[in-house]
Length: 118
Image 1 (cartoon, rainbow, N blue to C red):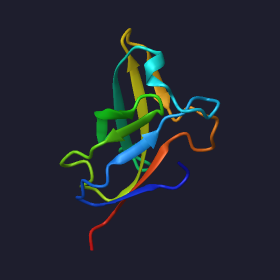
Image 2 (cartoon, rainbow, N blue to C red; image 1 turned 90 degrees about the vertical axis):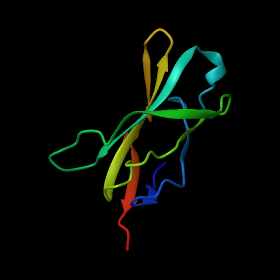
Image 3 (cartoon, helix red, strand yellow; image 1 turned 135 degrees about the vertical axis):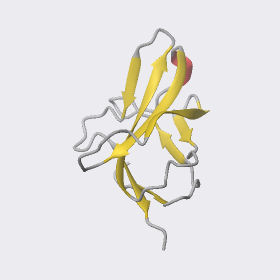
């Protein structure tokens, strides 16, 4: 995803839907390994306070073979307008973690823009 995902301040739709890909660009096949959960983290892109606005948000697996996951915005997730960056982490059953995006990109984060209300 090279363009920012856009959502308006206070909105809870649209959901953030992503296709997770391995280092070669192929979709992650969740049926090939034992995972316990998929988590979403989002923090401000810049500024002195870069603490996560969302930490360990639960993501649903929509397509296990095709690597599609979804985050449904929680009540306060979009309260503050601005530029944010996100990461997705697959937590394996044995506790190991696999973080996305993980490809060799200039910006290794998911860009998210929360637009101010008019």
